[in-house]
Amino acid sequence: YAFDRSVADTAVDFITHRENDRPYGLVVGFFMPHNPLICTKDDFDYYVAQIPPLEPESDEYLADLHPALRKWRERRGVDDLTPEQNRRGLAAYYGLVTELDRNIGRIIETINEAPGGDETVIIYTSDHGDMAHQHGMWWKSSFYEGSAGIPLIASWPGYFLQNETNTSNVSLIDVGPTLLDIAGGNPMPDVSGRSFAGFL
Image (cartoon, rainbow, N blue to C red):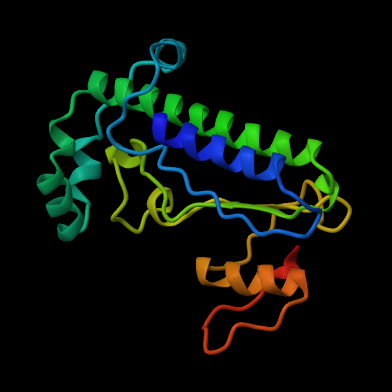
């Protein structure tokens, strides 16, 4: 918590105390939600009360798994976790996501209150997903959507489409070229990524 709150504090301070109105680029990197799955007691208590009892994966499901995935589960010990341990882990994970939302919310509020806030592009994404008990699994390292699929949310009021979902495939290597394209800068040399501004 302390690290992510410090990151948010630093971002808020930068946005609030800029000495001029020149355009700026700011990358803010958070650690949460991440193992260890430990959140505040209030958040944990809230979510654990919302999550119904979980069922273990069926024997049929486990028998049909690819041998590599069966080996992964064995190495990681996920099948040794009880349904109650999984439920508690899920509650803590949700609590950590809520903490991330609070920190991002502080930054967005600061942007909106700052001069030029309505002209600020915000792109939210992540480096990987987390299974968060989908298929009875945790962490990354699989090709299931929960692990390999990541959020990418872009906002620029008055310019980007609003309340739209686009299912086109883009990659993190496309984010840099997209930001340069939006800013009117020269394309990055010798990169594989391409701008996806046209989707926005």
